[in-house]
Length: 226
Image (cartoon, rainbow, N blue to C red; front, side):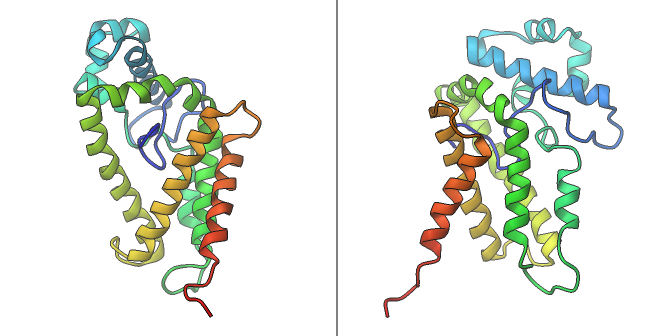
């Protein structure tokens, strides 16, 4: 994971439209939670994780310590944010509802629907990914952050796999789902790397589609020689 946390949860920013607020969390509270994570990542990128305190983070956000602890138990929790923060409003609902009716097993639109979901995420996160590039570099310099990332990433991916399996009516450990999701995840990571290294000639979504097409060329090859 060179510059990202999870397939559908890569950043938090005030400038993007907030994700749908979970039940019991108002839009204002959702915005505050996003702001805490954004500022925590910016401070981590600039000073290192140990280089700022919760009080300094609260001052940057404009909240009290009490408010901070209403959202996050620890500073490291704030840095990695909430699982719901990276999902555009209604995106998962649209994905879950897009499965064609009358299909048994894996639907013929699963890959296309996942690609659409990822593109929606990438379009929303393009500027945020650039602005948090320093944070992701800091993660790999600091063992505490890297350890948490290695814990959070698989947990959130497992949650995502459960949702896909629920949509498709199969077990979460279905080998085809794992292969598809890991392939799309790798394509997303490569697209982000290409995007960050480029001169903005192409959008992040365009970079993703280029990588996907390259993979399709290989996957379309026959499995055995004639």
